[in-house]
Length: 237
Image (tube, rainbow, N blue to C red; front, side, top):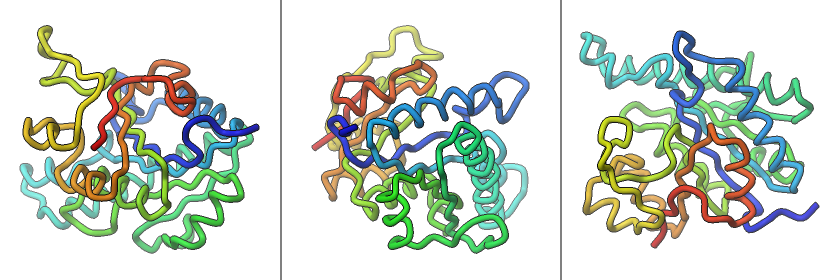
């Protein structure tokens, strides 16, 4: 079956999106998201995926507790591997072939990141999960997602969250938050909106890579976005 508007995507999934109250990795949530990934793969879409690790550990937060920032960031990278392994296993349990590549060498459980091999996996319709961020401290998984999307020549970066898109402030704490169905990279930067970090936004802007921010918890959103429906917020030049 032919893909919709986008032939190849990079899905950025925050660690928090895998959480529910009382569980840092909720299997039911994993299953729901995996089913959405399966649905768009069956359309012929090639899928790369970057997971955050914030549901388990954040290097920046660890620094406040006295952990060296560099050490904390490496702990955070390992947290992304835990999420990635869980998601890979969930995908494969529903018949979706997936490969895990890591920016840090952990060859017992994953392939080392290799752009050429990753491209070949995508062309073979395997989902490729990229873990350990960029492999460098002080760089977030948002930056890793932007970098991998550009390296993989993705058509779009889908930022999957627990909210419906981009607001001028946190909609979970501010009832008067204003929603943006469309916004430019420049406006994101000028308004200092916390969509993705500065490096990630700049990379996408300089490489003309659109971002769609959507609520992954709403079933069917991923498919609708891939087919070209206006879901969530579209960030572009």
